[in-house]
Image 1: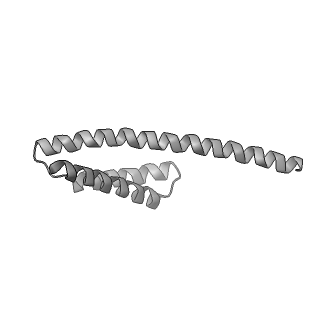
Image 2 (image 1 turned 60 degrees about the vertical axis):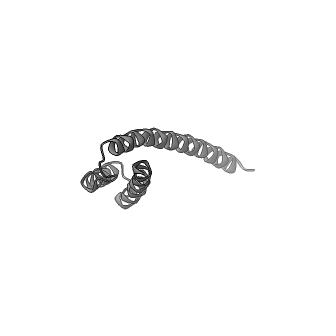
Image 3 (image 1 turned 135 degrees about the horizontal axis):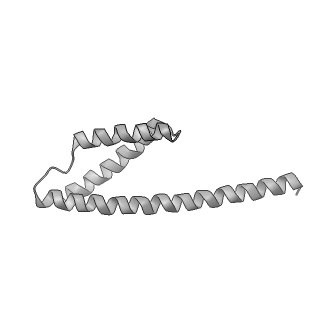
Amino acid sequence: MTDAATRAAALLHEHRESIDRLDAILLYTLAERFKHTQSVGRLKAEHNLPPSDPTREAAQIARLERLSQEADLDPEFARKFLTFIISEVIRHHEKLQK
């Protein structure tokens, strides 16, 4: 292996270690987020509130799109990501309503 190839392999390894750490952070952050949304779902169920709040959801999507632009991340990706998370939260809230 050449020196350049060895340096490239070391850099690749460092990038992959960073990616692995960030993946773990994302998963633990999502888990913490879902703990809070489960609490919201229980509160909604106890008070007979609807499982979804379209006004809040639209505001959150707009907020995340703005944040994604600030972070130099594709706003469309951010919107799709949050839309997926919101759909999971609503699904959990609907289960709690039963």
